[in-house]
Length: 129
Image (cartoon, rainbow, N blue to C red):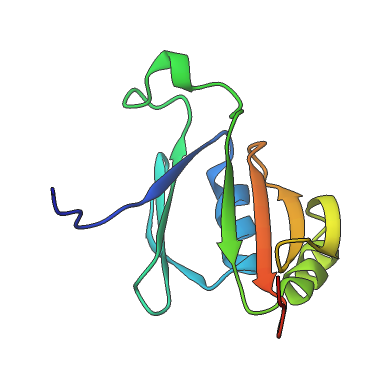
């Protein structure tokens, strides 16, 4: 088996500042690197990373510079309702308000500034299948 040293999601963006603010206001990220073509976010405990890259940058292949489809990013947090409150106060696009799921998660869906579907979930305490 090949060892994985690190995995990081990079989101293509048309507005790096707006995208950076979306993720730092909702989640436990701080800005590690900020330029005119790339922003690197890292969790305060330094265990999680998220990259935001200018979708038109030459290192992004032309066929992948369009609005994303066919995937979403999930953030598992302690309390999805708290994230919802922040999203609402910041006027972020809310796809669905927090609701309990059949599989034991409280789930909120948002759309980030780039059109990426963001799933914010928290475990339901004492849930039993």
